Length: 149
Image (tube, rainbow, N blue to C red; front, side):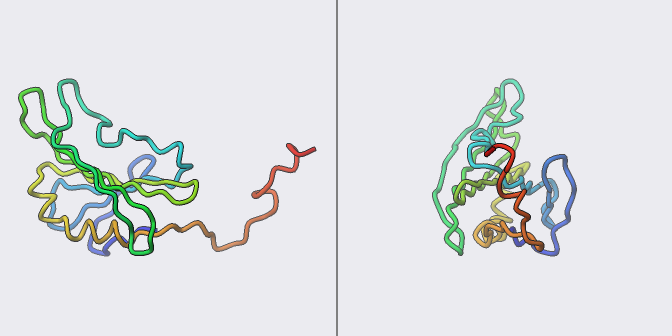
């Protein structure tokens, strides 16, 4: 569960939800689905780089949410073949038991990200696992009876 501020605009993107903080034109916060830990891609910072683009000044910080959920924050500038910054990215990855999810922040500049950083990090830190549904699970959802016979 991610406590997104009411002021952030929400957009539907295939496979995830995207938010845009007010006053931060061009900055997006993409929330991925909860997946089995092994299925969470390791290359989220690098994903979608065009030929000649690379990461610069990549760094990683191990952190935790307010509820104790492990959180790793990775950030880097994306530069073109001439060393000019094209984009600034931040990935917040969460792991909980066998589950994982990630949030990708994309900003046209590091300065724009830095101007929104306090609010974005606060959102990262307030995240917590939400594995419950409103209705109880049926036995067939928990155990495959056909495989055991």
